Amino acid sequence: MAYQHELKVHNNLTRKKEPFVPIDPERVRMYVCGMTVYDYCHIGHARVLVVFDVINRYLRHLYGEEHVTYVRNITDIDDKIIARANENGEDIGALTERFIGFMHEDAKALGVEEPDEEPRATLYMSQIIDMIGMLIEKDHAYPADNGDVYYDVSSFEGYGRLSGKNPDDLRAGSRVEVGEAKRDPLDFVLWKAAKPDEPAWDSPWGKGRPGWHIECSAMSTHSLGQHFDIHGGGLDLQFPHHENEIAQSEGACGCKFVNYWLHNGFVRIDDEKMSKSLGNFFTIRDVLKQYDPEVVRYFILTSHYRSPLNYSDQHLESAKAALTTLYNAMKGLDLPPVEAGEPDGHAERFYAAMDDDFGTSEALAVLFELAHEMNRCRDSEPERAGRYGALLMSLAGLLGLLQRDPQAFLRGGAAAGGPSDEEIDKLIEERILARQNRDFATADRIRDELQAQGIVLEDSPGGTTWRRE
Image 1 (tube, helix red, strand yellow):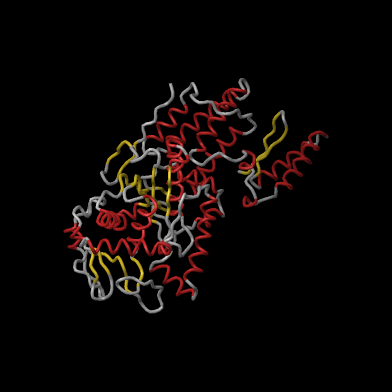
Image 2: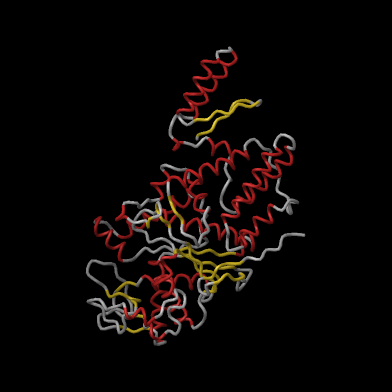
């Protein structure tokens, strides 16, 4: 009997694990808050990219490629972008285009599939203005004397239910900043009046630009409808960004906004919060200079997406060793097509882990079970080992792993450092010749020289292969 999937997800709106029931199984819809593009992506962004890429892949596995719509936005106008462009003395469009390009390069390196849509805030100005107008019309927002438009938090019953924060407690610790004209300290800006030397768009309330929160409400509802299945992002966005999105979207549309709210946990560096001020801030590009992108992806998936992820060289080295073990198991096998319903239950255990709120760490453990079985029967039952290998590659593909030629991974590549592939192959030929001539001292010297440079030789009846440590 085929495995029956029962996907459950932890919904931060209800603070419990719930069965995932899409509004329309023919069109599962997910929106994830993407990057604000004024700098290189850091390792925290890498986690968002990889986590929701795996969720997207698994939803497509369950419901079919054509039945899932994944939207990940780009914030290409906000205070930080304007400040950085002014600091650089360059056009805002040029700045954002450059860093969008860098973001795409980083995502591709990490094996992240492109979303179905990637809306940019500056291209949705009419939708943003329309939504603000709806909020004013429904008495959820008001134009202020300073030209700004604010959301009236007191008009929305249930504000704080996503984050678990009490509005009265929030008010007690808030104050109105100089220059603000809002009625309540909790009210937040929807439209900012134009300032000198800042980009601005025409609106019924005068020239200006949108606040950050309204951008996502307009983009998500335009792309996926007023009510959709999943909204995701980093835990740092839960309040106030996602809380404000709910207030805006439900206030404007008069219906439930999102059924399931998913947030990935923070990344810590050697058990400390990542911060530029602490000097422990790593961009994806920094990390990829030292580690293969698939190693970084594997490392991110070793922890449950909701848990904190502690970044350290030790953990990256462990991820490298683990991935090397899996690729070594696949090396040299003849992999047949995968057949459904493997008899030993590995696929079922993998699916059960993923169906339990995308439990990637438990799913990875199943991959190691398969690798163990492959190694156990490699010589005695090569066909069986091949079937295990095919299943391993198929299941790992749902995590975006183990899709490369094993030898290509094990040999590292151009960024691996040390001698080139050609230099290594030449030394191996010299060693083979030395052994044929019974010049074992020379053969051992070559092996030791390569070992000192991180090159491991593996002799077998079929010849000598190599890999980088």
